Length: 137
Image (cartoon, rainbow, N blue to C red; front, side, top):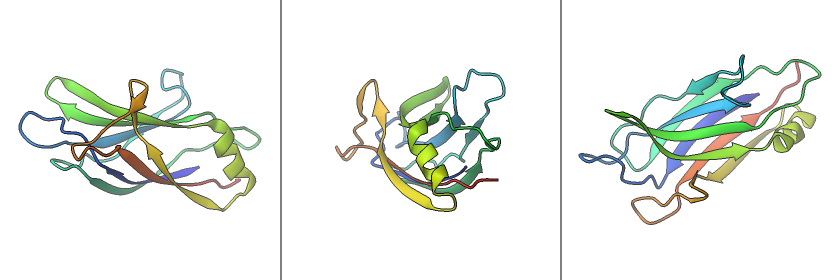
């Protein structure tokens, strides 16, 4: 599976001095499970719109099915990382893409925080735009 993180729009005001320093962390399956690794985009500093255009490859052994894909949108801070929100792409959707191997799909997903859509500085819902391509090996 190849995941391209395209952009995050309508980010909230997160920093005391400045706007938002956003990055994305992607994990296929439970990030606490041994063997599952997280991958991160670069930090896009001081903006309410972050354009990434970064690709990430997650190998899936032949004959396997996917687990859920978790994408967390974060803001690094002096005290750690503040969660802006997260998106989850269910394994069933990933398996549908695998069945049409070679095809890709662009998804625009709402970024959720504490069970509700995260609202940006411009009072619009924060959204994540990604492209997913599944290929059988």
